[in-house]
Amino acid sequence: MPVKVGIPRALLYYYYYPLWKTFFEGLGAQVILSSPSTKGILTDGLRFAVDEICLPVKLAFGHVLDLIGKVDYIFLPRLISIRRNEYICPKFLGLPDMVRRLAGIPPLIDVNVNRYRGDNELCQVIKEVGRLFTRNNFKIWLTCRRSLKVQKHYFRLLQLGLMPAEALAVLENRVKNEPLAAPGKITVALLGHPYNIYDPFINMNIIGRLRAMGANVITAENLQEQTVVSYAARLPKKLFWTLGQRMIGAALHYLERSDVNGMIHVAAFGCGPDSMTGELIERRARAAGMPFLNLTLDEHTGEAGIITRLEAFLDMVRWKTAGTVEVI
Image (cartoon, rainbow, N blue to C red):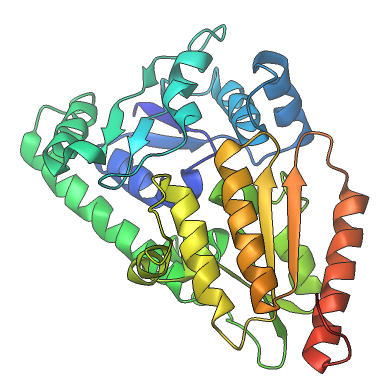
């Protein structure tokens, strides 16, 4: 019977799930995802997480709890840096230690992922995880190569305009293709951490609602990495938060595109880096005359309020596009 490895459907799952899934399955493990986010999963997370942490981490607690009793291991890497000279949110570093105290939790695969120290360290991490399942270093290496290839394909699908759920459906052969933007629609750039904008529960299905209201939605993940990095480099001082830099770079790029009609920034209440990057993006958007909406999410955010603000924002975008009002 294969070893069952649980992956919480939270945080950087939206970036790296294809890589993780392919790697573990290639080594003979069975990958078990936590259930899609629900009110029950969030409620469970709120019971055990400290009040001071942000909503996405509280939700991650709930996803870990959802896996208890279903798997032999839970994969929860300690993400420090995924790019040289940059860092991930410090709460990601402490998450394995925070959830380890949960009753009944299976062993954690909580290796350090720190690209700041170079690729040699990453290779050691891959070997360390692989040896939980096999002593064959060559098999680990081949599986790693195959996993990276799948991950690159996933990123290419995102750059074609697909959202993560759509790209995963293509990778898993559940659909052959996905329609891209329809001509004539207004286009809205939706910016935020992937776990804020791609989890339809946490954000009240913002992407689905915008599309239903007639808007084409684009995100930072739809851009090539070189584009994001080059635009982010225009800041007077480099941001050392990787995800914040991605948002800033995407925002500066989209502000120069004539086919982008509005911009929405989604942040979690209590996120320090978001409070800074959101302010920077809003100032640039206002200076460019771009309609801008900032949405802050927490466990008390109501669906009706989100819908009302989205409807009002799209009305403003349509008026601005039609030239009937001047945006201040």
